[in-house]
Image (tube, rainbow, N blue to C red):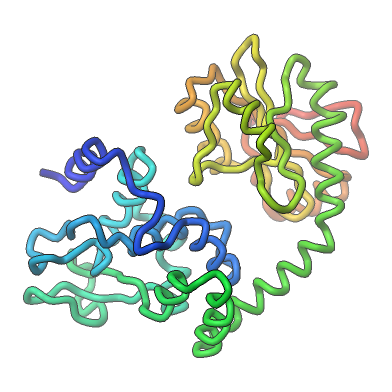
Length: 326
């Protein structure tokens, strides 16, 4: 049986994965990766979660007796664990492994190993070998499993053992400092998008939630609104700055307010289209908002990543919106 079919059968039997492996949740994984400036990479979060899976038997046909997934997994194994077993979709495209393997491999968080003669040995000993695998570094695993008050200090010590890790940790600190400087402007733009853009250009749409503050990203009141609209947000779903719903047409609308990054690009469209389909919505629309034409030009002069079919709105020029045509 092909790996895809095998994992699909496991998913149908188990219903997916538990909330934690080895006592580690995805929330903890994201906290640790955020401290390494990697916390926004959902595929990487789920990859780490997969390599903590000590409940699923190894998917190697010739693995030693008692071997679990966490003992060693190939790129294909990880792609299926993340995409099928965890998310209930299709396996990840292996061409994207630079995004969900490489970042932690460069830091030593993912260790390269090979299944050879019935045992896992260090390194990828043969190019393009189907037995080339990965497992979590024991130091990183200990950090993930540490008590809430201890993991940060352990991570700092682990990061200092390697120049690349230390650089990542420093980048995370600088990013946090920069975030605090721009947060007020970002929150203002999000509010303007919900309070001014949406009523003018999206009549009939109701705001389900606004992501403009620290703490819980979705309040209890917003969870009730989402439930009433028939929408369930899962951990792997994208979290737009503003999410709206039209009760008569059953369409949803996504607004991304950009002060540094996060436009509606092809990846965001794909993520939210999957969410809309999963929740049975009639369709989904998209708008990227900026504070000024200057900021929009600065971003799009470099990124040129606005998705065709989405809309653009400028807070400083609020009386009109623009559709991105291909």
